[in-house]
Structure formats: structure tokens, C-alpha cells
Amino acid sequence: MLRICKDSYRRKLEANLQQNNVRDVWRDENDHWDEWGGNVNPHVMVTTGQVRRQLMKLHQRKAAGPDGITPRLLKTCADQLSPVLGYLFNLSLMLERVPLPWKTSHLVPIPKKSRPSEPADYRPVALTSHVMKVLERLVLAQLRPQVEAFLDPLQFAYQPLLGVDDAVTYLLQRAHMHLDGGGDTVRITFFDFSSAFNTIQPLLMGEKLRGMGVNGGLITWVIDYLTGRPQVVRLGSVLSDMVVSDVGAPQGTVLSPFLFTLYTTDFQYNAESCHLQKFSDDSAVVGCTGGGEEGEYRTLVDNFVEWSERNHLRLNVSKTREMVIDFRRKKLPSQPVRIRGEEVEEVEDYKYLGVVIDNRLDWKANSEAVYKKGMSSLYFLRKLRSFNVCSKMLELFYQSAVASTIFFAVVCWGSSIRASDSNRLNKIIRKAGSVLGFKRVSLESVMERRMLNKLLTIMDNDQHPLYQTVDRQRSIFSHRLLQLRCRRDRYRKSFLPQAITLFNNSNNSGLTHALLNVPMGV
Image 1 (cartoon, rainbow, N blue to C red):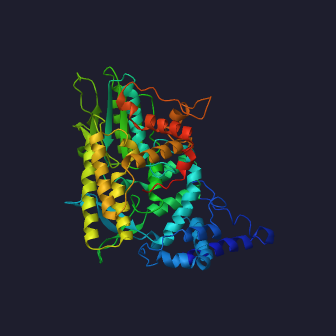
Image 2 (cartoon, one colour):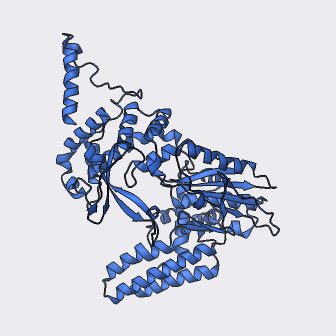
């Protein structure tokens, strides 16, 4: 790459010197135009300070990439390497090319389920150079501000202050409001894509970025980043033959997830009775229907399927599911959704982003799944104690295996579960406390603290999809929030009404700001 750059630079200087005008020799040397119609300089440049800051953020315990360079080395020698890497990074951006060693990746198959039986049960995670990861973070910082206005507000993945909790609570809030307000039915189609990241078309990605007004040189760099990628599969110490990929975005890199959100951001829909929400490639069409009027919902499903085909995203109809939420005693028979002539299977519950949602919204299936997984983790905690493992390691295992299982997305379901399910989960917590030798925080305490923190986060983020719903409840006479009108107990026990009650109670006791400083761990 250095040789190519020097030759190109020499030819430019020689051409200018032939003009016999010293003043014009260096003119336009900082301007670089390409087929995408953008100017690389001065818009896409990195500084030595930016490079150093990213090097200092590297996790030293991470394994080395295919180039053998460890993050420990990069972090330890950040002061010495920052100027060199900064020069190489700017050279890469100027030439709109990514060096092959930086693009080379080792694909490690990670099982999607406990007992994989076929290649489709594995997720190919790419191990790439840590030098490239630093450059990707710097490019991401340049790219995000240029496309901020085009991002889907209902894309909950890879966005600041948004996550699984927000995606699930938003879906449930829309469903509860419709059903509590006199609506008949909520229909949800959960789409399943086959290897979504691997089907991104680089040239189509470039067209989408150009439509967002992204710097032309950066677009060309992104296309080069996505094409001509040498890849090998690594299983243990065995490597497969190398294959060069020109399609898709490698999973496990810094830039690919955000590029995927940009690839899918041109299909957005958010109406009063229907909306499409996304969490990376996990997409769900939610239709709040009444009186048998399902035309808008079915049209949205058809349009999304058609858009997916145009953008080369392969829908797996056999794994796509529909769930119908209807609390009426006399339910009308529902016509199944069809995709490419194939009926979508209707289910009573569905695991969405790690949370099991059922068509009764009573969280019985999710509570059972959490209980079984919690008991399994508790068994291993007891085994570790029988091996005389130190208390510090036992506490670490509890936090990472037991507590993370029980309290995952607790803000979505914690206030709505039955008393018997709550008691069973608290029993696991008490048993874990006896193993560790001290009392653990109860499910209710963790739930209330996290619910209040989540509500405060929503109130401080005007880009949050639930911000307007909460903002409308602000009282003009005090710092309290007006309670939502809830006709049924099911809605009253859901996240937002319960969080508003906690907020008002904490304001009365002066604990709101104190709770914000409580660590989220348990």
C-alpha cells in the first residue's frame, strides 16, 4: 500500500511541476474526488490523539487477531504507535482502501443452541485485527453524525441508551394501551432472517449511504471494507482453506452492526394501529386491530416481505411466527398470515430477544423458563462451593450466571408475574445467599430500582420511543407524573404505570436522584 501511495503521489507532483509554477505545485493535493461524488479531506481524517484514546480503551485480555498483534501490546505502546497508526489510518482513508491483513478474518463457529445438529445452528463470528477494530471505531465516530437523521427511531439495537428492555417494553406498552382502550386484538409477526449479515450487498449499501448524503470517499472506503475479505474457518487449532468474500458484513466486528442498521433503515413504519420495530435483524410487525379490520397490518407484512426480497434479505418462513393476543371470551377465528403462499405458524408464546412473551401476557412461560435456568445455575454454584472455591469466585459466578439469569429484562415482566412465580424466584435467590454466606437482594428490590432507573433514562432521552408517552404525563403543578388511565389490572401492573408510581413515591421520599447513583449490579 505504501508503494502504491508513493507512486500516486509522485505522479501528481510531477504533473504539477510540469506547469513551472511553484505556487500551484501543492494546490489541490488535499482534495480527493471519487465516483461517489464526495470529498475525503478534510471531512474524513483522524488525529494522533484520537488514535491514542482508542488504543487506551482496548481490553488487554482479548485474544490476538489473525495478525498476531495483541491488544496488550497496542495499549502498552500507545504513545509510540499512535503517530504511526494515525498515518496509516489516514492513508487508508485517503486511498479508500483497507489493507488485506486488516480485512482478513478467522471465522469461529459459535453454537446458537445447546445441542447444534446442523451448520445453520452455528453463528460465524469473525476474529479480526485489533488494529482494524481501532480504525473501525474511528470511522464509526465519523459516520454516525452524517446519518443520524436517517436512523429508524424504532431500531433498538446499537443505539445509545437503548437495548432489549426498551424494545420489549415498547412493544408491550403499545399492546397494553390498545387492549386496555377497547381494542379487540393485537397481532404480532416475528420475522426470522437467514444469515442476515451475510447477505448485505456492498454496492447497494453504497447507494443507500449516498442517499443519506455520506461523504463519497467514506462510501468507497466502506465498500472496499465489505469486499475482497479473505476468510478462513478456525476450529480449535485447525484452519480451513481461504475463501475471499465479496458479499455480506462479518459478524463480530465493530462497524458491521451499525452498517446493517443503515442497510435496513430505509423501511420504517410507525402508525397508530401498526408499527415495525427492529432489534438488529430481529424484526416484528405489530398490528393493533379492532372490528376485524386487519388490512393495514397484512399490507405492512406484505410490504416488508417485498422490501426484504428487493434488498436480498432471505426470510426463513418456516421459523417466522405469529402470535395473536385476544382476551375476549368469544374469539373470532383468525386467518393466518401468508408469506410467499406459505402459512405462518401461530404460536401461544414466543421467545423475543431472550424474553418469552405469551398471548395471555401473564408471563407464566417466561417465569418457568427463568426458574429452570436459575435452578441449573444454582446447582453449579453449589458444586463450586463443594470444591472449596474462594468466596470471591463464588460471588463472581453468582453475578454472571445466577443473577444475570433471574434479573434479565426484569423491568419488562417483574411487576406483572404471579405471586407464586415471584416466590419461586426469590427462593433461588435465598438459596444462593446461603451458599455465598450472606443475604442477597430480593427480586422486588432489584426490579423496583431498575424500573425507576429505566424511567429516568427515558425522561432524559427525547429520542426514546416512549419519551412522548411519559412527557405527556408531566404535572404542571409539581415534579410528579400523572398516572396513566388503566381500566384493567393487567395494564396497571405493566412497566410504565408501575414505574410512574415508583417515581412519584420516590419523589415524595426524596430518593429519586439517590437511586440513580446505586450500582445496577446486585
